[in-house]
Length: 97
Image (cartoon, rainbow, N blue to C red; front, side, top):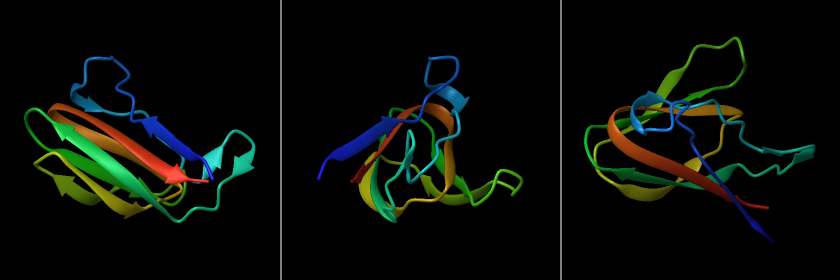
């Protein structure tokens, strides 16, 4: 088993008041990990972070959870996800494959 992790990327690279690039759960290159649960780490300096998910490219984004303090916790890995930060924050997620 190997731990696969990734950071939600701020397209501007400043990690302040941003919407991250879209992440695709369960997929690493050509491989499907088939993992349904993962771990998210949220580090907040200021503001809040929304974890948004959707099941298909044409589905609307929905807020799955709002974070207002730094935390690490287990979560369901969706097909597509992103974070929206209204302050200074960085977010990572990991899954075991």
